Every structure is written in C-alpha cells, then in structure tokens.
Image (cartoon, rainbow, N blue to C red):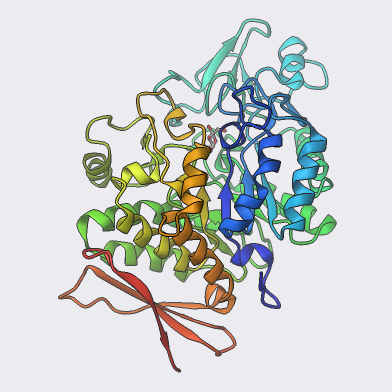
Length: 481
Ligand code: GLC
C-alpha cells in the first residue's frame, strides 16, 4: 500500500470490523474463533482491507457480546488463545494490515475479580473500584441506554448491601474513575496489548467514565482529562498507536474528543453524526442535509484528526442523535414493521437498502471518497442478511455464510469484486484520500446531486466525486488545476 510521507497509517486505512464469534468457525464447534480468522486473513487482504478492528475477545460471560469483560489479560477460550491472537497480529502485519482492538474502560463484567472483591470487602483494596451508594437516588435524570431491559442505572447488591452504578446492563458495573488505582489498572491493560503488537484501540462507550451530580454524566471535563492522560501515556511509550472514540454525541461534543493541539485526546472518532445522513439522503433524494452535516464535521477538524466514517456496525443503527421528527422518518423508511429498539434499528446494510446493488455501490463509493478512514462491517461485502426476529442485536451478528462469500469472490460481477477493485484503486490514490476536501455548491434545481473536490495537498492532483441520490449514478472525474 502506498502511504504518503507524513501520513500516519490510520489516516488512509480502510477498516473492517471483524466480529470474531460470527466471522469464521475454524474448529467446527459452531462458534467463530481465532483459528477461523487465521484461515481468512488472505480473504481480507484480497478484498483490500488495510486494518482489522476486533470487538472484545477478552474472557467474558458474553452477556453483552463480550463488552462485559471478566479478565482483561485473557482471551475467551471459545475464541482460542493469546498465542493465536499474537499469530493473527503477526500474519496481518506480514500482509500489510494493521490490527485495532476494543478497550472497554467504562465497565467490567460483574464476574470480574475486581467486582467480586469490591462487593465482598468495601474496605479492601478494590472497595472503591466501582461506583457504590447507599441509595439509588443519585445522578437522577441520567438517561438509561438499554432502556428496554434496565429499569434504572442503579442495581442493589445483596452482598455489599449497597447500590452500584451501571450505564449498560446490570451485569456491567461501571468502574470508578475517581479511584486513582483504576487509572493505573487501565493504563497497564493498554500496555499489555500494545506490547503484543496491537496497533490501535477503539475506546468503547467513552463519554460515560465519570459521574457528577447535577450533570447528565456524559462527556464531563474529567473524562476529557483522562483521555489526555491516556493519549500522552501511549505517545510516550509507542509510536502511532491511535485511539478511536466511540462517542455517540452531537457534533460539537464529538469534536472535543479529538482534544486540542496542546492536549490531544483521540486520533479518530466514529462519524455518528454523518452516518444517518447517508440513509436519509437516499430516501429524500436531497443532498442538502448531508452537506450541512458534512460541512460541520469535516470543516472544524484539528490537524491530524481523522473521522471513522461508517454505515453499519455490530450495534443498532442508532437514531439517538436525531430530532424526534427525523428519527420517526428513519423508522418509517427503514423499520416500518419491526420498529426501533433501544433507540436504533436492528438491520444490516444490504437489507436496509432492499438488496439494491446500485444503492449499495453508490453509498459505499461515497463512504470511500469522503475524508477519513472508512470502516466496513463484516459480511456487508457479501450483502449479508439479518434476522430482526432475534433479540437484542443478534439480528446483525449472524455467522458469515462462507459458501456465499466463495461464490461472490468467484463472480467477477459481484458487489464483492466491485468493492475489492474500488478499495485497491483507492489505495493507489493516497494523495486524494488524504487531500483537501471542498464541497461544491448544490444546484438549486438539482438538490439530488452532491459534488465534492479532493485535492492532493502537494497540489499534484485533483478529482471531483459526484453522486446523484435520485439516479444513484456516481463517479470520479479528474480535473486539471
Ligand atoms: C458500545 C458497544 C456496544 C456495547 C456497549 C457497552 O456501545 O458498541 O456493543 O453494548 O458499548 O459496552
């Protein structure tokens, strides 16, 4: 892959979210695993992937797909071993791919030894590792994220005789970031995996680290101060190990996760504000709202900051950032029969777009042409189906059907092969990928047409990307300066 001088690997990379449990079952026990990943690294390389993001594979009771960790230094035995993970990192590197993994810092599993110790011995060394209170009255008004199952963010623990705070399932007690030992623990966990060769970390649920009475307990200044500390720690010990924030927050709040030149925080943030605009533009055939959001997200970026643009992931397609009216429209367009769960839609990319390959190609091409590092979701390269009759988010986490993947790879006209050639072509034009971005004015008679120019920073090349949300035509046009 061509990487320009002064451009960090993650500024031009295409990421692939690989949900290990569902990707490839290597040992035939019906559960995806690292042996399966090892078998399929060539598949990813051939597709044109630059970096793999692994959601949590730590030891876990799997109450929340692995986001409930019982041991941060162990791989869940169902996936395999740490040695196999190290082998994945080594082989991915040999194929020119980077590896990013989830760092879940906000909470652990209730089965983590720290929580067991904390609930048994309030005065012991782990007594303050979690957020305990004598009653459940504190932080009133904080929203409940998993509102379909959790009646409260507080749960009573019989053993300790107190309530503990949790922003997600009750089996996921929140760590107490006011406890200095918790900071030491989580920095040591980042070191543990960085030393195994991991190239970057996705920071799960990062707005929720701190609680303060009288606030909404999201994106507090203390959380940003911790991110400055974590970033500094990594920059001191390693080279170019980026942090990617999962912060489903409005644009102004989201931009703060990049930090400032003097106090940098995350290198990357998921582009939640822009994600829903792709889907809306497809239905309204009006590019103007997309443009307004794109200008706001791309227009104010600090130097070196990178958006991770995406269409789908392992969670619901979240409508959290929309006004109630816009959320209602999205629901009518995309989930008229099954409705919205926990604020989102339990569908995958291809079914959302009615398996319309022209729409899939157009939105994917737009995703790949925007500034930032796009992130694809496993299975979307083969138009994978979902199953909204399943509970929680299992609808979008089905096992990848490898017979279909093999057929797609072999068919020169498949979406897979179109995507692969687009990804390989993107790699050959790194100057445009990281170049300047300028949205061209929209013609009032043709609000369905979006055009933007990418110009290489060295002034060598420029090209205009055009997409018509009505006809679904799209493409690049070279321009001479
Ligand atoms: C993030 C993850 C989601 C998980 C939650 C709690 O939003 O993406 O899957 O349930 O955090 O860890």
